[in-house]
Amino acid sequence: MKKVNRLLLYIVVFTGSLPLAILLLIFLTPVPPTGEMEHARKTISIAGRGRADTYSNKLYAEAQIYYDSAMGNWQNENNRFIYFRNFEKVALFAELSTKKASQAAENAVSNSSNLKMKLIQKIDSLNNLISGVNKLFYTYPLTSEIRERISRGKLFLKEAEIAYQEGQYLEANIKISDSELLLMEGYSYVNENLKEYFQSYPVWKSWIDKTISDSKKNRDYSIIVDKFSRKCFIYLNGIKQYEFEADLGLNWVGDKKVRGDMATPEGMYKITKKIEGSNTRYYKSLLLNYPNDEDKMKFQNEVISGSLLPNAIIGSLIEIHGSGGIGIDWTQGCVALTNNEMDVVFKIAKVGTPVTIVGSMTDLQYVVTK
Amino acid sequence: MRNKVLMGLSIIAMVAVLSGCGKKPQVKIDAANAAIEAAKTAEAPVYLPDEFAAVQDSMNAVMAEVTTQQSKLFKNFGPAKIKLDSALTQANKVAADAVVKKVEVQKEVETLITEIKTVIEENKSLMTKAPRGKEGAAVLEQIKSEMTTIEGSVAEAKVMFDNGSFMEALNKVKAGKERADSINAELKEAIAKVKARR
Image (cartoon, rainbow over all chains, first blue to last red; front, side, top):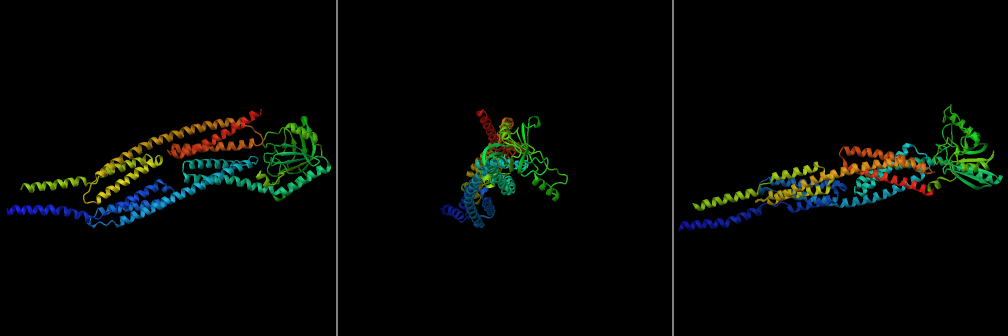
């Protein structure tokens, strides 16, 4: 009996204290910050879906580093004896990770939105530049290098537009920058050249005014050639009678300097000879007195100053002639009209009729705006 | 005596059960990680970035679960094992889908390159018929320059394609095709206008 009672006592004590011991063991086990880690992981995930890795990569990377540190620390603590574990650092890293990820997510939204706005504006502005450049460049003789830059600029812009449509804003930004550089190079080249060329506008204006005034005074015909607009105007008594399209020298920008430079000269000239039939290969021709005294003096000065080679030869045989209307600048410096228009000019012109050739009858501002 | 034996057997059984549940599923973890690496090799981050990110996220969640269980006195890796199996399946699917997507992009680039070349040839032919009025000639000069640039861009895209960078090549050929098509439309419009006037 005593033995049975003792056995029963052992069983009761054991079954009673075992669960208590187990509960105590569980209760005293250090608790890892699973909630904080879960929160950090979810915040990083949200930031990633918001493309924080692209638009806020520094903060996103820091968030990742803190999370990895937290996990590393957690695993290290798990390797220690259970009751010696300390998860304070894990919780701290998890908290820092959450904070960084949250900032990254916010920044990504703001940065991508700002970049998107900037890209829309840039794309619009470059498309406007291309449109403006197209108008200006139609008639301006560009080098093949400048044409190539403009072409590449246009293609980069198209690549930027496609990247933008795909939501690849960083890629679009790079392409936009490349496009802008190339297009501005082309635009600046023409702009600077035009500004330099139009410095002669006051002189051209004085020639035009005199030519029209003389036409009025003499009650006679005068001819004015406007190189920039490719026009040949016929005045009578100071009033415009006719306006014709003209083809010019291949290298029409600027004054003629030497024989073979393919430039159409600028100055005040007169018709010295009327040529037709087998004496000309251009249907009908009106020979001008180029080079005039001013041209000769200018040529000599340039040879003396060294701007021209000592063996340079001044040009000659500049005419207004037919066989034109091709639409490109192809002559060696002459002004070419269609044969029908040449008939009109040939009829009204006589030896001594003034012919004034200028860079432009309107100023640069008007030319660019038009 | 019989009670002592029974008690001893119970303790052994309990330890065995707890030990079985309490073992970290390292083999399954390694398998899932290997599958994710395989997805990376298949360029899933390039061709299926969102899906790949989801796989990585799932794996992070599983590792957090595993580490949580390792912290416990009485471990139970049962739910983690199920999640690891799911992550493995997911990673394998993303890897397979990335291969399919890559082939799709490859075919798209090939098709576009062929189409651009056709348009370029057509444009060259149209240029001979385009009007050469006052502005026409200068425009044709610029178009000629642009066609040369597009051809250059196609050549660059071909190099990217041959190197396996299909996504990079895709944007380039799309841009080239749009420009070539735009020039094609411009030329046809100009030719049609002249015909209408006649």
